[in-house]
Length: 81
Image 1 (cartoon, rainbow, N blue to C red):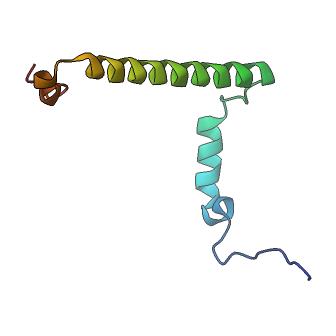
Image 2: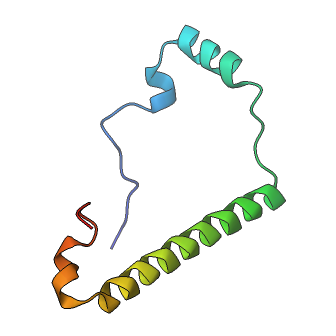
Image 3: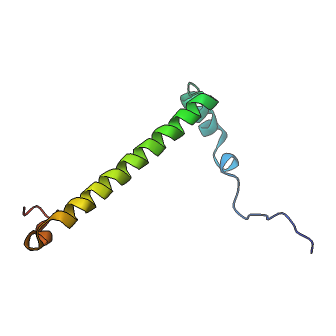
């Protein structure tokens, strides 16, 4: 079965912007340089560490809820106690 490339009816984002706006955007963002591979890997590791910390904090909060006496469970997290 033959496959063909999808053709989209909407224009390319870069070509739909007037040329003067393209120039202004490049002028405004010209100081930004792409990240090196090492910087990309460090950013990924930082995001993973933040995600792990958030998961651990959620697990600790869930464990704390399980240790509350039954009469205080309803008030956990709603500002009443």
